[in-house]
Image (tube, rainbow, N blue to C red; front, side, top):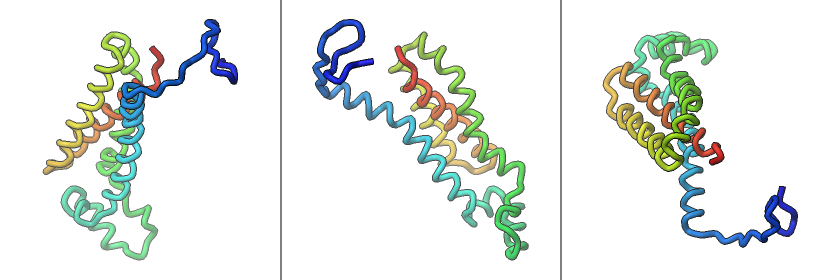
Length: 158
């Protein structure tokens, strides 16, 4: 553990503490893994309660919601398909985080984070152009793989 004066462990040399552009960009890219995870959680929670979204993709949930306006709002969203849509991201993120360490050791951090970002981008494109529920779920799976991969890669020490 470094001492208060900035002495590193074992070498006795002072750490210069320079903040270079490379370090800054690396920190920003690493923080993007957490950013995309938080953004997706916030967006998906709001979207699944929107009437146009429910009418297009989860008609049975919307019909039940409209028929039972006086009941508890949590009882209206009991569709297994809607649950699969919501939870697919988290399941995929868990699986990706288990695989990411092995891939990172073989390819390195830079390529692994780029791969995670590309998976997230592909998932966002599929979800953006989705016309059916299966496209939403596939897109969420890709989003989850991208998020899990990026989050695990940024926490692995070289």
